[in-house]
Image 1 (cartoon, rainbow over the protein chains, first blue to last red):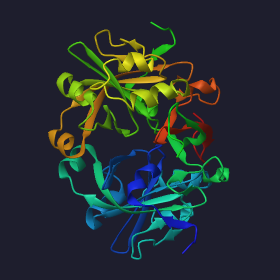
Image 2: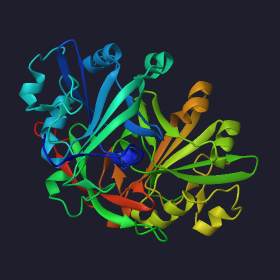
Image 3: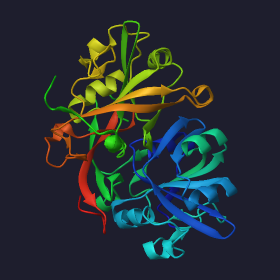
Length: 195
Length: 195
């Protein structure tokens, strides 16, 4: 395994999503891998860490997650801008070579078939908490984060280091139609601890 | 009213939150105004626009929203960094002068008692969609966006203009403990329309 990929303690896992990056959602069921992009993913709890993600009824990923009960939420980087937009624009249902076409390379960080996208800055392995009413009425899925990893070139010791990492590691934040903003400079509020 | 504050068509309202900014949540019930900060707010649907926000059982805002059925989600700026951190660190339950102490100035954009925070870049007026199970089990609240406004110095014609606006208008993205990142430079993915 890439030695830069380090585990993140579960109590710090919320920090991987707290600044609101657009994420990739990956999943696997019966030999089929998929990856989609999602701007509508959000932390939900600290301990155990949970998150929400919106999965439209049309997306193949939804079916894989409903069947397997597992998924990964991961944080793509400026280097993965085109890949992120591409997996967010095409469905595996129509494009069977979607992942190869978008240049997606998969890791198996959990030691089984669950796919993780290579080159991301952080990964949260999730177990689906079934909530049929939310899923049916709002396309809203809740996951419990059971393990987390980050690349220590941009996240280490519980902190993002966007300001000192290569700019290609910055998170990307989708607005609409393939238009994103990269994350910018750090700012500390008055009275914040120096940790 | 400030002539820079313009209505945003409801079908574009999701764009105000899509890039994952930390937000302020304001509310009112029976003469009491409150404002809190929330990093865990997220778009949920396009039409009608909906959003989710996590409100801990300890926060006074939760009680105001449960009683009034209404709230505002708004996007603070770099100029409001300290204010945002301060309203996110103190509870109205213990600090009765919380809003004045943090320098919060309120607007009444909806023409009634619902409070909106002056100086924000965008405001989404929400009607609570009661979901008792989500609220009790996950502290998760769902709102339907019934009106939206933005300051045309940084959001106009359905687009953010962080790159040409004064840097003090940038959105802020909380990581932990008063440490934020401002939003950074725009990036357009390959093949994205030029709109």
